[in-house]
Image (tube, rainbow, N blue to C red; front, side, top):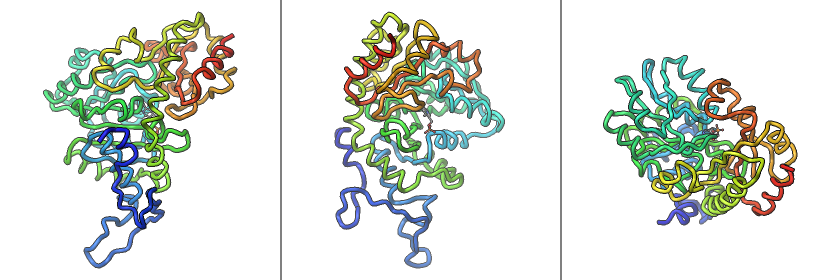
Length: 376
Ligand SMILES: *Cc1c(COP(=O)(O)O)cnc(C)c1O
């Protein structure tokens, strides 16, 4: 089935009374038919029918073996890290969502995990950091917010040779544009808060795994730790995913026009959009995905220009987060990446002139007019 159809029709379709929309099973617990007899549902922390429907959809969209829906993207990342033990070593992208960085550096490391943050777009760099304790490579591609592109196929070969798990945070491209498991990755993570939900109204997270073994390990953590997605939020995600395909197409088309416009603006420098042919990750992105998404980052000429832009946009909203139908502009230094140490941040280029734009589904001419006016 084509992905456009999968977004709408990949659920189980066993809805009672012919309901077209999956019912919300707002039940914490489920009664038993007899001793040792279960409907398949016992207690909603373990499984809930509305959530199972969503997990079935996500499993199919990412070509996985199993998927688990979490209350947030961070909860999904925490559960993955709970698989590891003190002394284990993990190689992670040096340009990461700020929350992941904060978790690895303040909590995972306190629990004995060791991290090396490297530029994963350079496979030799990754190779150099592998030791006998290395258990995983954690990659964001394109990375947040610098849009560095890593070659998932090459990293997965490296992972297989060395018995290391490859974990990909696929939040930015979504299964609509890229399937890391197809490329050889073992675990895919999503912040469902972003494109999958798509409406800036719900928090959610996902783990998708490629094997029964990983499913068993993570299902055990899932039911034990308990950061599961509620039935109502599961329903909102099911509803959001139905329009994922058309939203992604529209957002990408808008982003391409806006990125090109930004490259020509005299007050804008260094536009990072992986769909621009001049982007160093363009060819790899083309090879490993079906599209480039709708995330753009760029630098303004002066700090004053950045602040003016944030304060003067009218349609575009100055807010954290991304992926929804509304176009959002973010100040990574003060928002998403505030907890990354200044030295690390500046090495990457996240400074007082650096902004990130998540392009929505509005009319692109209105968005450009808004940017142009705010930049005057
Ligand atoms: C937002 C985000 C997360 C965290 O997800 P939450 O739903 O906010 O907990 C993780 N990774 C990336 C790339 C993100 O953009």
